[in-house]
Each structure stands twice: as C-alpha cells, then as structure tokens.
Image (cartoon, rainbow over all chains, first blue to last red; front, side, top):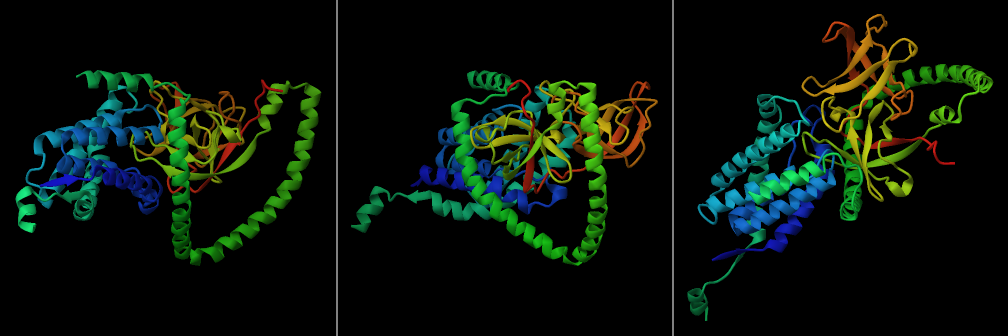
Amino acid sequence: MTKIRINRAIVAALILLLIQTAVVPWLIPSAWSGRLLIHFSFIMTVFVALLGGRHRAFLFGLGFGLLEDMLFYGHMIGPYAFGMALIGYLIGLAFDRRLNTLAFVLLLTGVGSGLLDMLVYFIYKLFSLTHLGASFVFYWQVLPTLLLHMLVALALYLPSRRFLVRHIASRSEEAEGV
Amino acid sequence: MIGLILFIAVMGFTLRRTGLTWPERFVNDAFGTAQGALYRPVGAVAGFFRDLGRLSDVYKENEELRRTVARYTQDQVRYNWIESENERYKQELGFKLRQEQLFKYKYVTSQVIASGSNPYDKTIKIDLGAHDGVKPNMAVVTVDGLVGLVSKVSEFTSTVMPITELDPTAPDTIQISATVSGKEQQVFGIVDFDKEDGVMRMSKIDENANVAEGDTVVTSGKGGVLPKGLIIGKVLSNQVGDFGLTHTATIQPAAKFDHLYEVFVVMTPDPDKP
C-alpha cells in the first residue's frame, strides 16, 4: 500500500515553478526560446495523477495552472488552469495506481503534454488571440516541448517517487514485524 | 460541463481587463520577490559565461566604441545647440503644455525577474510596480530598442507584454504608430508582429513615401500611447501591400526578447496632473 505525500508534492511544484520561470529561460538558447516552453508543474500533475488519484490531480492541476496563468497574465487567465486540471483528471481517471513503469509514465507525459499544448492553442484560437496554423504550432512548439517534457519526466520520476510516496505497512506486515 | 462553462466565462471575463484585484497583486508580488532572488544571479552567471566566449571580440569592439564616443561628443555639442534652438522656436510658436511634456520622459532602470512559458502569451516580469510609478501602457525598452508595453501592474512588480504579442486582429490589441528616423514628415505606418516569420511588419505606408532598406524605424508618438522616438528596428524590405494602395515594410526588431536582464521603463509625465 502506498500513499502520496501531497504537501511535499506542492512544495516541490512551487520550487520547480520558481526554477521554471527564473532559471530555465537562461538555459534555453535564443533560437529555441519560443519553441521549448517547459511546464514543470504539468509534469508534477502527471505524477500526482499516477500516484495520488484523479481528484488530487484535478485540484493540483487547477491550482498550479491558475498560479501560472496569474503570474504571467498577458491576455487572459484560465487556459493552463483548465488544461492542466482536465488532463490531470483524465490521466488519474484512466490510469490511477496501475502499471506505473517508467516507460509508461514517459508515454503519458508525452501524450498529455501534446494534448495540453494543443488544447491551450485551441483556446487561444477560439478567442482569436492567435492566428498561427495548427500544423505550424504542432511542429514549431508542441513537438519539441513534448520531447523536452518527456526528458524532464525521465530525470524527475524516480527521485520524485522516492520523495513523494510513503509506504504504509499493511496489517499483515505489521503483525509479522511485531 | 459546468466546469467548462465556468472556465470559458473566466477566460472571457479576463480578456480585456487591465486592472488587477488584490489576490492577483498579492500572488504576483509574493512570487516576484522569490523569482527576482533567483533570476538575477542566474542571469549574472549566464552572462559571465557568454562574456567569456566573446572575449576575443572585446578588443575590436573597444576600438569601435572609442571611435563612436569621439563622434558622439561632437554630435553632443551640435545636439545641445540644436536643442536650445528648438526650445526657443517652440516657445515662439506657442506649443501647448501637453505637447511639450510628451517629450520630457525619463528612463527608469528595472530588473527583469522572470519570464513566462506560455507560447501565445509571452510575458516578462519586472521589479517595478505601482509603488514606483509604473502605469499600464508605459513603454519598456532596452539599450537596443523597444521591447514591449507594461500590461498589468501590481504593487511591486509588473507584467510586460513584448511587442511580439501585438496581433493586429486580437480583440485587445494596441497599435504602434511608427515612422522612419530622419523622414518623420513623410513616412507613417502601423507596426505589428508576424509570429511565423519572426519579423515585424509596418503597414499602411504611403506609396509615395521613400522607405529604403536599412532605415531605422522609430515610434512616432502620434498614437498617444508610446512616447516619440523609441527605436523599433531596421527595415529589411519594402513591398506593395495587400490592396496595392499602400506599402508594407518588413522590419527586423532591434531589441532581443529573450535573455533579458535589465530594461528601462519610459515614464512620461501625466499631462492631466499638475
């Protein structure tokens, strides 16, 4: 039996958000600055969805999406809050505490990241705030971001699982221990 | 479903707003402090490594700069003379107070503390806010040229929307009126940004106006939003526009929009206040 430490997840996501906004822009070369747009809090949402269930993932995605939208409030608030909450919930609904191999987590992060970015793109398209073509956006921004997200998830998954998950000894194990 | 409707409502509601409510301000300022503490040292380290790479160019650059300084000192003398002349003429012509004050703007140094990672909503945050006299729609420049406009102001930080976000057909757009340095009387156009090509477009130029490659495009100050004479970029090419009646010029932006470190907020005195 395992249980997620949601407090730790929130602290980790806050620190990652600070790193994302203040450190990452310096590491990405100028030519790629419009293409690699990393969202650490989204990766954390996927982890929470897989380790902690769909309701937690929904609230987690909602909270951090809203925070990110609010911090960088350009045109409107809401797209990332909506997208991250939805995708966190869906991943939690479909794959809650099942089959958490590393490759599967990477696959989910990749697919989720692609879906999230396309969803945000369509929201902006809906309000006619962007006029880029969908295929251009996919090739220019979504695909590299997706690959980067998968890489970061690969790097973060094992440490964060160790950091976030608490093993609760089941009754029989306790009895054996005594 | 209710959630979807709610979100659409929130997005629609926040679309054209310029003010911020107090929770937004609080979150912005609280995060801004932490971001500032992180962004600046990291920027310094990154800058250091970049400088190491460019060390060989520095000597050449130094030579160049010395020559430029020599030229500038000569120009300065000329400029002072012309300015005083100009001042006198204006007084003689009886300029209105409002027009006079539009030229008296000051540059306030500001540090960038974070930059966002939303591809359709690129914003940067700076460490000056309403407390320091920043207001929405003030221009933000670097030493190279115009970077953007202040879009949201909270107490100690504010959000800057780069000019790369100025989409001419977006519902909340601001249009920059521009002209060409040295030909202010004949050239006039409106500048926006083409995201797919990464260049700026200056449209609605009169077909008789003489815009050549390499001309410097500056703000004209006629739109009432931005002050006059901020550098936007250099003209790459000039061709006949969509309807054949006006010309459209392609402009290479002068400023860089990423890895920003130090920017200047251009503060204009409010003519309505004493």
